[in-house]
Image (cartoon, rainbow, N blue to C red; front, side, top):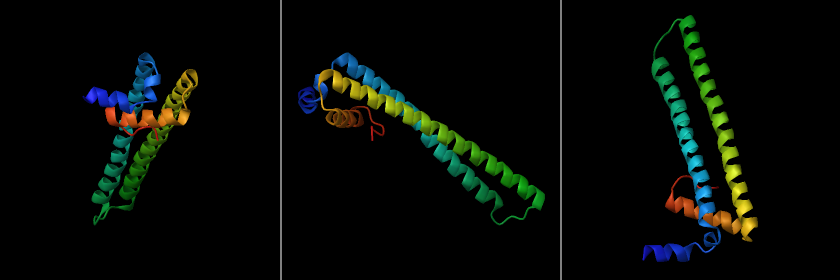
Length: 134
């Protein structure tokens, strides 16, 4: 019964052949595998900020030691921001490539691009999970 419901629901995606859908879903899986590292970087930034506040809060340090600590924290934050920018660029390129593949499939099979993107977005969000294509 569930398979009947799923085939009725994906009216636009049925027009794309299965082998091409597998390629599109594999591209999306590649995207969400990279996307999880974004969360790790954001958590790392939070850990550095909390760690700094716990170390410095209420303590008295000699000026030289405090400056070393601030420089270390600034270096760590710089590394995290650089990683965040690089990962953001990689995610942007991956998502753009996936959207171009969807547009190519839409042109190839005579499907409305926006409808294909919208239905693919809903499909991968419900079947695979992850952030979707937005």
